[in-house]
Amino acid sequence: MERRNLTLLTDLYELTMMQGYFERGDNETVVFDMFFRSNPNKAGYSIAAGLEQVIDFIKGLHFTYEDVSYLRSLKMFSDEFLHYLSGFHFSGDIYAIPEGTVVFPKEPLLKVVAPIMEAQLIETAILNIINHQSLIATKAARVVYAAAGDGVLEFGLRRAQGPDAGLYGARAAMIGGCVGTSNVLAGEMFNVPVRGTHAHSWVMSFPDEYTAFKTYANLYPNACTLLVDTYDTIKSGVPNAIKVFTEMREAGIELKNYGIRLDSGDLAYISKKARKMLDAAGFEDAVISASNDLDELLIHDLKIQGAKITSWGVGTNLITSKDNPSFGGVYKLAAIQQPDGSFVSKIKLSENTEKITNPGNKTIYRIYDKESGKMRADLICFVDEVFDESKDLLLFDPNATWKKTKLAGGTYTMREILYPVFINGECVYESPSVMEIAEYCKQEKETLWDETKRLFNPHKVYVDLSQKLYDEKQALLNQMSVAD
Image 1 (cartoon, rainbow, N blue to C red):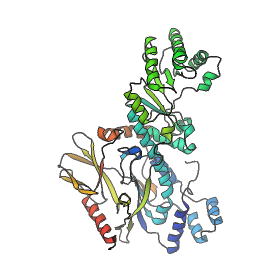
Image 2 (cartoon, one colour):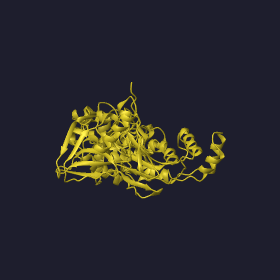
Image 3 (tube, one colour):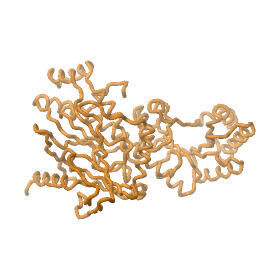
Image 4 (cartoon, rainbow, N blue to C red):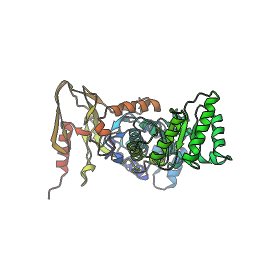
């Protein structure tokens, strides 16, 4: 992203609204929340991702001479406004949940506190970046869960919706738990492991399958995974792979990082047959990897059927999140700052209950069971609220207030999960490496109860409101309701 200026990566109405505020002389400081309304893939949780690219975007915000000339050519913007844009820079604050964190609907993944023209301009790019990477990281986490400890490789570049989706999708997949990617540029950019075998065309380019396997083994004796389904997996592919492995062993070559890949057919049946053949030949440690339009549901079923696969190459269905191709994050005004520095809460109403927003300048506390370390709930509250872990904490469902849980003092811990990223336009946050984020994400998932991680009908983790925030929200709803 540092190689190009993305300032105009925005919807036109952001700029037309900016000009409206400019002409009004109105650039008051506001709070915007970026959040999502439901977990994708009917999951019990999501994974936050994309913050590093948001940081790059904010750091690079500026209108070039060419940008201003283009906007002038649209004949929609005044010279005075264009002059303002020519000197534009971001001067506000941004708070965000770190990448790799387990997140839930309705809580701000990112909060912008900035002059309204600045906050408005950055909306579209923030949504574009975080929606995409959070979607793919969440999908990857589900696939990795289904694989139950087996390695999952991201193989989706050729099916991604363009280079950016392939690159940043691979990054997000690594955060979600993949152990490697086939995407070499992603490997270079993000310093993540790259993995791959060979294609059917490699086998087809040789006079016979054995020669193709033998040549590949000579080239890559320490990374020899052979694709065995070009002609006949059981009658030809696996026997020829075994022949090559046997010759390597007899030649004194230490066999490591070796095995076969299946890319077609009944993967459960074929993997069981191949495992017996490999074991009988003395290659009990040979890996059987599989690809072929895999996703978490198919992997789950193959596991139930006893498939002898221990490495999974997942492409199209992961890089596109094919069954749920959008994350659905939104960016809503939550408060306006007054001259005395206080914030006046704002709320969006809707006939759809799930679209009613949470007002005010807020933060989020994650609540854990002290004994197990597992997550109990998230609590959204005003930034100035203080809690005492030694005292009882009453939690209630803001949509069904009779559903209440009292946590006894001393039995729980709380952690604020919104971190400062930009303060007064200056970045105060240093992004970890992708592999460090992936390790953090792994630890985050360990704080979930098993019931929340399951693929089907997961248990819901509640996102509650503090009593103070709930009361403020109800007051605004009552204030804005119209009598019949």
